[in-house]
Length: 120
Image 1 (cartoon, rainbow, N blue to C red):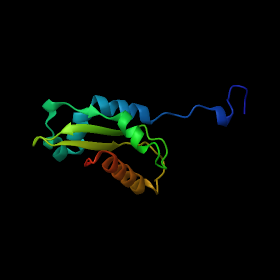
Image 2: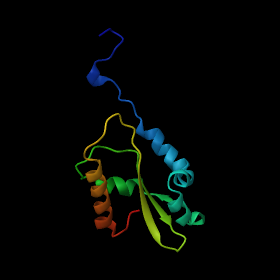
Image 3: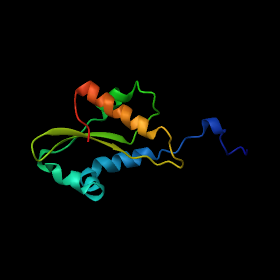
Image 4: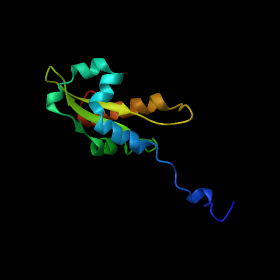
């Protein structure tokens, strides 16, 4: 290790999630149109969207999961007038995560249990 290289424990970790989070907020309708066109078509975009980051972080804070800053909980209104929440998870990672399905299940039931709300 040279004098210019910080020790491994003090090196700043790369933040790959924050740019995705910002992109999701800025291009949410386009994101859904590209990847989930059927869901995009069901949303009444004239009603706007509500990003529920603080609420979502409260829900999962006690869950035994690692920090996931690119998870987005978004409130939308469907064309039939029903208000629903959409949970979006984007993560840049180099290896598969064996507990991914369990974590998504945990998020779903915590949202449903806390708010009695359906999650798409």
